[in-house]
Length: 381
View 1: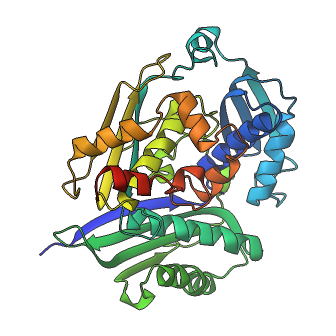
View 2: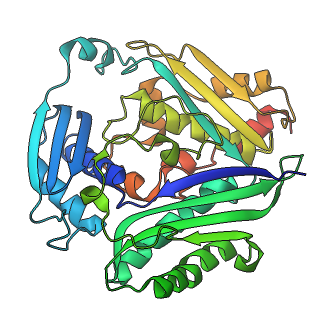
């Protein structure tokens, strides 16, 4: 019988697209630190020895965008001259203007409408302690462990990718880990077999152990399967803000509405409503009302209340999906202003999401389960 596999991938903070995300979110944080009412939609492109910062920013903050970008690049670890992209020598250009007055009409603080139309999704399940799907949780943990190793090993470079295939049974329960793929950029001085042993013992084994698995039980492990990975980062591939939306969410296990997160202030529901949907889904699962939940929200530009709210428990709910939807409507203010207030989103908290992940990270405000007890009580459970 063919295995039932589900695969998710992740990338490190040094991947070109995530470098762009990190710069955009660092600029957002810099604006919010001085002016919490900043309206920011910052887009970044990076390539060999070049960084372009674009977008719409309306703020009272006085921010040196190139300086912020250089510090973000330095923090990621692109500090080696001659590698084709480093914090000190990269050329940086800015093409930033203020937010459209037409958009501002429906999204200013007096009106409080959504910054755009669209649908957003949040998901949660019981596969991991953080209530994330196991494939993406493992892929993210591997990527973050790679980043830790880059910071302590001068022979590694910041660009990397991970991928995990998990086997499930016919009931949707985890059977085991089928395949792990890890690729990491490195110095020409890091001999390949030595690197592969380093990654196997220092990255894959401890991450799997943390989630209760043994590396010896994994059927397939591929480490830098093409061999050398010396040319990488923005020198190897152009990076753009917002291209890693599946990496940023649930690895494809739950739906994604299409809107990216990084560089956007919380009046943009692409970001804030996706965070709120995760918060609601996680609290439903934490309350014991379902083993797996997806929450969908949808908005119209300039309109404060969502045009739809939907819960799908995939048949795992102890009460009807419609009842869970009604509970969320009763307990949560789903206007952009209500979401911002509940999750305290007008703060410089976003740069870390670009590098460490948006979901399944304990200290994110949308990861709290403070609503679970109330939901359980209202459901009579």
